[in-house]
Length: 206
Image (cartoon, rainbow, N blue to C red; front, side):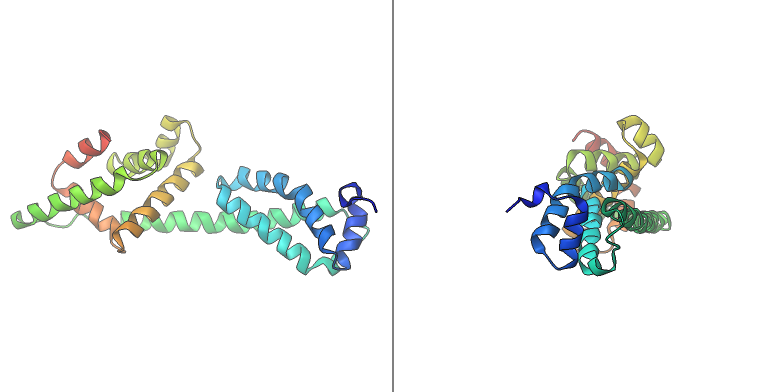
């Protein structure tokens, strides 16, 4: 019996429509990498790209009976990927926008002299958490939240895309919020910086 990797796309599609799991596996193996690469070029996230491609193949199997045997399998996969990527990109951008809005809407609170000790404690805690971030995430986070550089400026300085800057920033905030076990990460950062510039100097030395 011929190996499935010698079968044409048309034959694999016909077998898939009959529920042949081996045919599905062969289609998956043939096209997974190229589809994942295409998704990554737009999303700039391996995790998001892999998730999108996974959805494409799940839908392929679920809707296998609806695909025309005369149609092109690769064309179907690319079209399905296109719409999945568009949806994922919109979700990404909405999430980034929400994060920025949360931080921008927080004004620096009025501080009393008695608050100085608490702020220093916040500074120490924040330094410890930031120092544990992955190098790229830490660099982006410091430049964005402590040096107040724009996403484009950070991208230019680091030689990466704006989308990658946003991805690193999102990851850093996610990690820090999980470490704090609190929804008030942004307020903590604002309070820690309100006392002086010592927090920035310390973080820059990491």
